[in-house]
Image (cartoon, rainbow, N blue to C red; front, side, top):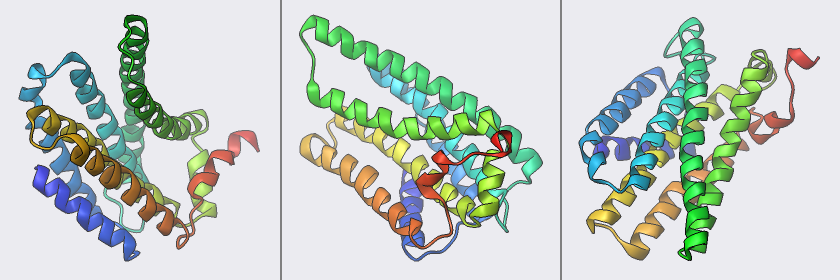
Length: 238
């Protein structure tokens, strides 16, 4: 499953760089791969330290949302994986799962940082990494809150920007891999397989720099709002 997920990540990076849109077949295949990936690793979780267990279970929620959002975005495409009447309730469930996962993860990990300050074990670079992850997840939280506040918000944006579904879908496809890769690179570090600077370089380059650059490049070629949609409103506020 890990090899298949990595192969799809490479495929998606090349597809995005070649400006080819995702397909329904890819979406369904990727769903089976990631649910299989996490299902095949659950037996290792009890052996992890508590803070890594929290990260694993939160990643399950983030992964479910990414796939639900992917299905929802594809429902607006010419080649939907599911009809909107099925994709929409799955997406709504995914929204609440994502918010609960963030609450679970950040309550624990920021609370752990406070304890480390009190105990004199505070590591600034870990806090910086946690803050950057918080910032990234806050973008999705903002997206979710706008959708829950006004169900007509995204349909309105997609009527204005015809490629918005594609940009969201590609973001979620990369997000699926990045969430899994960051978690399993930590597990590899704990096992002594890929440690130190090599592990940090793999995480930073493979899960941050390269996918972000690909999405930014794609943004300039599509009729999509990209980040501007955070400042747009739907019918509720017309």
